[in-house]
Amino acid sequence: MNKNILVSGGAGFIGSHVCKLLNQKGYTPIVIDNLSTGYKEFVKWGPLIKADIQDKKAVKDLIQKYEPIAAMNFASYINVGESVQNPSKYYVNNVANSTIFFETLVENNVKNVVFSSTAAVYGNPIQDKIDESHPYLPVNPYGQTKLMMEQILKDFSTAYNSKYVIFRYFNATGSDPELEIGESHYPETHLIPLVVDALQGRRESITVFGDDYDTADGTCVRDYIHVLDLAEAHVLGVEHLLAGKDSCIMNLGNGNGFSVSEVIDVVKKVSGKEIPVTSGSRRDGDPGTLVASSKLAKDILNWSPKITSLEDMVNPVIQWREKWFRKN
Ligand code: UFG
Image 1 (cartoon, rainbow, N blue to C red):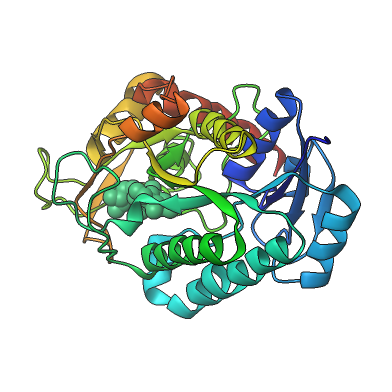
Image 2 (image 1 turned 135 degrees about the horizontal axis):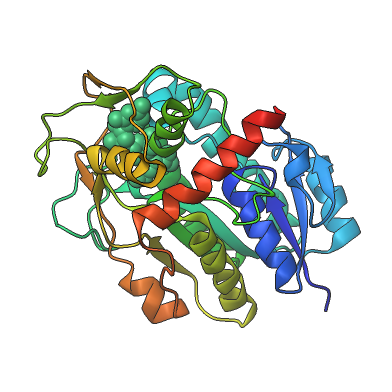
């Protein structure tokens, strides 16, 4: 049996880190990416097919050529705020185009799929640590699109005998310790890279979106999870499917919440420098607190995060962005 794995969105932040680990574990990632937000220089561990995921012919051709034993889907838009402003972009790409992609997969007998979902499917939490039984009440279109795709994958599984592992990520961060790849979005909207940009002088300050939430210091609390830990879960997830085990849905988080102010303080501490901070209003669609229970991933995959301190998460981001912006 070959060890080719089809990876949509493999030129992006999380997808490229997963490809690197797949390669280290003896698999060959076959990347399909339209490079709308990804980088061709992030595709280093297997071929790149530059195409849209809804391009049925391109997907069919690459399946016939490489005969992948499973697929992973990272190709989607990911900004909560943008999804509130421009929902149609999210429903068209994350739901319509992704459904066409999965349809092409099952039509061509690729029936093991690992899918990236999100903590945003839960909306405003009603319990301290969110587990997978928490109600689904997304408060933004981004979360809605991922919830719809989860249902579509379940329906496909019933109708077409396909299988899925769905991961609900909390806040992905960190980067490859060798700094070959990292997080780079234009425009950047995520907290940790923006704090690092304020530190390194690429922006004047970091704005805190809301300081009147019902949290210890009034700023939003999130569960940050290192991309290397996410990558490890994906390899375990695909191996779970390849071993013939059942479909499942799991949270991936580190189980500890950090506030926006705590993130800023840690970047100040590890760098030994001041960072200009301004206060802003709340951002539409932001729940106050999102913290995961990842017990199910431990039970099913024997996965638990290895990099759990905020220092160890922000340090590689500081180094990566220094290097990336020197070159770009
Ligand atoms: N924030 C600021 N200032 C900024 C940017 C962000 O205060 O300039 C705050 C946000 O309001 C939020 C926190 O920092 O409270 C984290 O924001 P991010 O934009 O970094 O991340 P989100 O929590 O909005 O979303 C991320 C992913 C989503 C995923 C979600 C799940 O982008 O895909 O985590 O928790 F759904």
